[in-house]
Image (tube, rainbow, N blue to C red; front, side, top):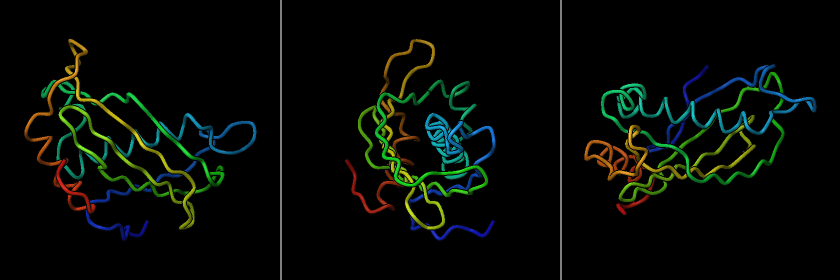
Length: 150
């Protein structure tokens, strides 16, 4: 796969639409889109922030469960397609992080999604303030993508 030409602050990942991802209508089964977003988020933490998601959960004792999702599905994604998912950090709050996604199929926007997550202690399942190393890295990505600090 050729490298992406994403702007600074935007993380991209190419994913194939596999047979197991489609429904009887032969298009991407919508819950699979949300699974793809999580794959991209996990890879973002590893490839951009250099923090494996398993290390976050097991050693840093922090998780980012989704508390709200908005999605618009604009173009069907079919078995055999390859999509590119572009993710950016939209907002960084005290414990909240909002990620924005565009799913591109052949250069056209196939879906747009906004995912609101909250930093939690995975043992107590309570929200926590973002630790400094996460806040710093997330705010840097947000600023690179054209936003300021929030």
